[in-house]
Amino acid sequence: MTAPTVSLAGVAKAYGTQRAVSGIDFTMAAGERVALVGHNGAGKSTLMKLILGLIRPTEGRIALLGVDPAGRSSGAARMAVGFLPENVAFSPSITGAELLAFYARLKRQPVAGNAALLARVGIAEAAGRRVGTYSKGMRQRLGLAQALIGRPRVLLLDEPTTGLDPALRQSFYEILDELAADGASVLLASHALAELERQVDRVVVLNHGAKVADGSLATLRRFAPVSARIRLTLQQCEGAAPPAAIAGNGLIWTRIEDRVWETRCADADKLAVVRRLLDAPLPLADIDVVAPSLDEIYAGFLRHEASP
Amino acid sequence: MRQIGIVALREFNDGLRNRRVVATTLLMAALALTLALLGSAPTGTVGVGALSVTIVSLSSLTIFLVPLIALLIAHAAIAGELDRGTLLLLLSYPVARWQVLLGKFAGHVTILAVATVIGYGAAGLALSYAYPAADAAVAAFATMVGTSILLGAVFVALGYLVSTAVRDPRTAAGLAIGLWLVFVLLYDMALLGILVADQGRLITTGTVNLLLLANPTDIYRLLNLTGFSNTSLLAGMAGLAGQLRLDRSVLFAVLAAWVCVPLALSGCIFARRQI
Image 1 (cartoon, chains in turn brown, red):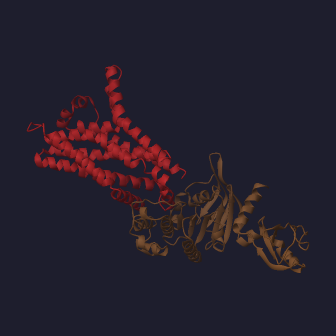
Image 2: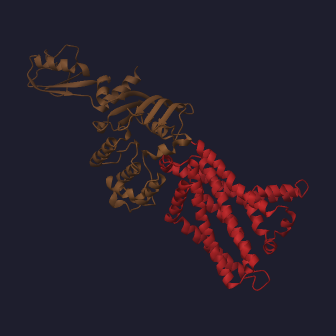
Image 3: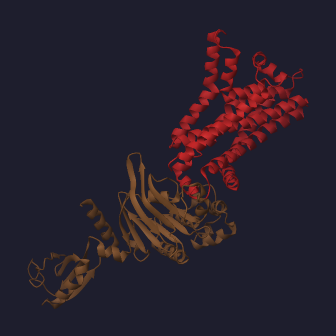
């Protein structure tokens, strides 16, 4: 196993008395795609700025490609980092190609490679136009293009898919896949959780500046304090109470529609519950087991934190 | 060095693109030509050269105009980029903050230098074509152009100090106008008032010297209006010049310090700045 590309140990950052993040331990390996998830103000952007060395931690240590990102010798590490800030903004009076040329020169990369980058994010035809005329989605893609300059080994993307339509989001995640396959670590801050399913290897949940969960989606599902939903459709159903066959067992049934009942049970128990339902003398028409979505898992973690 | 050059080039290109360079050059050329042509009319064929008269009037113009243009360009350099969100991305690149600051400085001073050289140069050429000038006057004119750029650099540096010290570009703009008012108008008025009130009892020549060095526009005035006998007579500064025991090299050194100290200070503030 190679050394982690990004590692944070006991990192805290306070602005005056206000703690932005605290007690963050977290590492990323090469080729890993990690989603950083949290509500607005949970500390996602602060964490990215810390990793970039734009601000210094009040406590703890940060290593980016083996060096302190806020230290004097961080130049080489920064060459290998791509960053897409939230609400990316550019000077409106220059063209996309000129802008990218400026950033490529700063990273000491050949400007000749820029045309391919612009084509890769799909704005090659707008390269000669002033950035001020770009739409939000085009600016976002230009932002992604600058982050991709020089095949970065670490990519930090803050809310990268805002302003992109579904097709563009898809191609955006395809680019991320290629980069990760190429060995880049990708850290993706987002609160659009639903679209992260299958796009990331790991999810880190932040709440009020603290890490509350870290693991693959499957792991999070298993340990999340949320439950799976089981939904039964019956052929016919009389009365307002659930049929006797499914009542009891400590499950609470709610009626969704005339013939549709739903209950929640812990993820670990769902198989047993389903088996019992299948064995029960019920006029079953259909049975659905809905795993909790990432949104529900996330909301579950937050609720869990709020009421310890 | 390379990174500074890249940032400087971008600032200059930005200046060309948003027509700042063109506007500044045209403004300075128009004013300089007006002053040169109008100002040379009354002298006719008297002993004083037209160029010397123009130096006096252009210097006075510079003291008002150049600091204003410099502060206008500089006050948003950091605060404005921070506000727009472009600074965050720039600083994530392998470029140190002092390199960003020096690069911007080089770019902005180049914009001012281009405007001054072309604008004033046009006036100087027009005049020397109409009235062939003495070599001394040409040297004085060249000094005037050079020190105008230096004065511009002082106020660019002061503008950066404001721009790094505050977060909001609007606050920076307000402070920049305040600086301009103080250095260009209020300081001299206050100094004059004090000197008149004091009647030479408490304030010695040495103190006056120090007080003049404390304002870059006064140093500029001393360099251009007392440096050459013709101009100093014309500007009515001969009396003052006779009293002052400041060497020109001292004046240049202090003016250069007025560039370096604010720039270094704003570099320190910027380095500690939370982005």
